[in-house]
Amino acid sequence: AMFDNLSRSIEKAQRLIGKTGTLTSENMKEPLKEVRRALLEADVSLPVVRRFIKKIEERALGTKVLEGVTPDVQFIKVVSNELIDLMGGGVGAKDLEPGFPQIILMAGLQGVGKTTAAGKLALYLKKSKKSCLLVATDVYRPAAIDQLVKLGTAIDVPVFELGTQVDPVEIAKRGIEEAKRLGVDAVIVDTAGRLQVDEDMMGELRSIKSAVRPSDTLLVVDAMTGQEAANLVKAFNDAVDITGAILTKMDGDSRGGAALSVREVSGKPIKFVGVGEKMEALEPFYPERMASRILGMGDVLTLYEKAEQAIKDEDAKKMMDRLLEEKFDFNDFLNQWKSMNNMGGLQMLKMMPGFNKVSEKALYEAEKQFESYATIINAMDEEERTNPEVIIKSLARRRRVAQDSGKTEAEVSKLMTAYTQLKAQVGGMSKLLKLQRAGGNQE
Ligand code: GDP
Image (cartoon, rainbow, N blue to C red; front, side, top):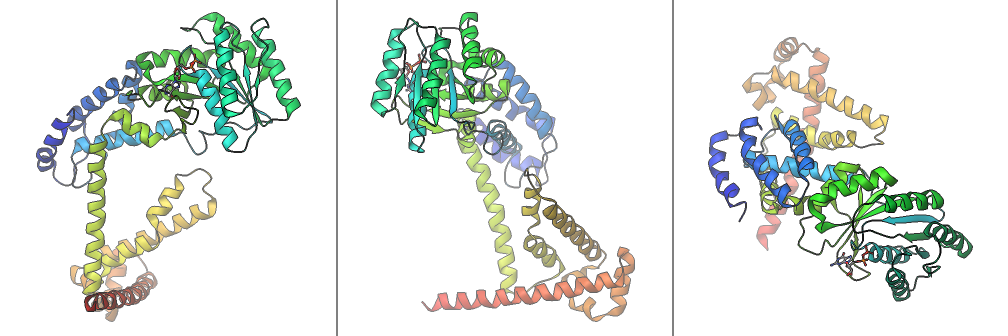
């Protein structure tokens, strides 16, 4: 119901902006408000919302509005992409860090689901064929140790504990020794939580951390934490430099704004989400799902995707129709050449880390060639462009076009050859298509 307004305004705005709209401060105003409200409703903390919105606004300014959608929808799409980017954080960032053994230190306030998450992680590792040892260091609450022992028994993972009379740092150290003795692949150290952040807890965590030198220090955050999440994450990250977080109780009706706060405040990834009380209820973190949940604008995004698809379908259909009519002029040539050389795909590649120089060079050359073809075609008159035979047959026309485009006659000839070749290929496709259709009709 919250976005009824938005949906209703879509048609109206569509008429107003026409087809070549871009995002401006003016047309972003309303959707900005919607997004801000959505983020606050999802319990993203206010300073985080402010910073995020500001960044988004700057980034979105001047973005082209896709045909068939309104600036509102386009803006929300930009926000959604940005959220996914922000929370996704690069390939592999969500994985546990390697280690021999992997040592995972669990941190978090009391009641957030830390002990449960320790058990879940152990089961998760066990399922990926890694042996595991759980270590209980919460000497302040005997019940916490019992709980871990019970969990361990249930999932058949050994639990190391020394009761409540030994120093937690000592227990942690001996736990790691035990893990090495057993030769397990991973050790998960559960720690004591307090009801709120305090110096004793942080001090103890720091000591345990320097004693066991974990590969991962995971902060367990209750998704219901709401606005406080940002402060909480900052306190823990400042004190023990976390490597990531586990967001628990995502099976509840929290919109998960804490996820954004975690990432924005610490720059560290959410590695897992807890989605229930059972030991199996642990999932890897999916940024797309979380972004859509935080924004609560699944419908709007679906709308965007439909518009995007409609445009693709329309383009494909036009091309198909022209193929069937066996029309293939210089405009078609440019389109077809572009898609055959997969320039969009190459562009995408360029944005990926590890993109090698060879492909970079290929992209550069493809772009140069495309530019050169486009320049020559631009220098043609309408007749030449839509009826290529006239220029192919006339040396005088080719000379004129070479001169007007500032290209050599050899380059113009190269275009003629490329055109003829591509046309032949396309002609073959067209015949195939017709045969297929004819076959289809007989059935
Ligand atoms: P700790 O004090 O941080 O160790 O918290 P616990 O692991 O004891 O969990 C506190 C309560 O939250 C328990 O009742 C758990 O069953 C429950 N809990 C933990 N994780 C989840 C979750 O992902 N979803 C739900 N619904 N409950 C959870």
